[in-house]
Length: 189
Ligand SMILES: [Zn+2]
Image (cartoon, rainbow, N blue to C red; front, side):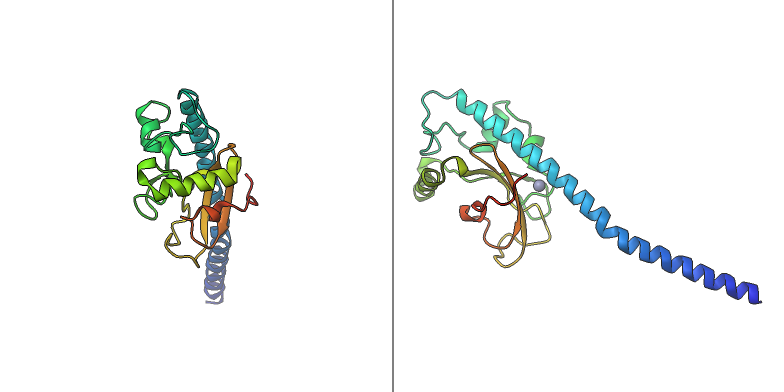
């Protein structure tokens, strides 16, 4: 009888230890998966940048900072690059991207807009002329599906590639749709 009681205690201890271990390991494993996915999106954005620069080289007469068409940036952005054979559909999607909805595989977000869009195109013009090489081009808008992109007080995980090819990763609050969210170049990758 005494032996059986000891066994029960042992079983309970082992169970408790296992539960504790898995509780300790869970965030570590989750963190590692998270980091691997961020690294994947970082490398995809680098590829996207290379494709944009190739596309740009194939355009005649481009200006360094102007309307997106003047700069030789692809109209309809990711779609044009895929149609033109610069990238595959897989290259322009992130497993945790924002579009079409939070937590679903989504296409990277582009900040420039065609001249026909009027005020949006003018905003881009002002933005790129002030930020120059530090203007954000393409972003993995909200890599963390746990937060809503519409919320300015929740923390978001964003990855962006800039005109100069530099990639930054940020985790912070605020409105990601505003280019200024991407201005602080503290998140170097
Ligand atoms: Zn991502």
